[in-house]
Image (cartoon, rainbow, N blue to C red; front, side, top):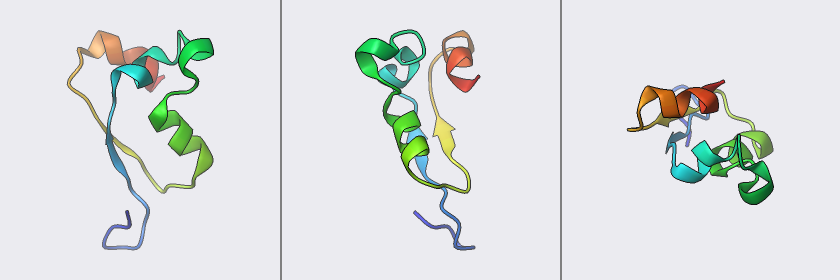
Length: 61
């Protein structure tokens, strides 16, 4: 999705598979959001979540 300025800025929810990916990469791979970020060029990715901060911290790093 391009914004008003022509930049690619997708918005996505962080899901359970995304959060599981850092510790279970053999089973789930990179996770959906990381796969998209690695395979395409984006100017910025906006991530939304409703998980406790402690659960999301590993994913953000």
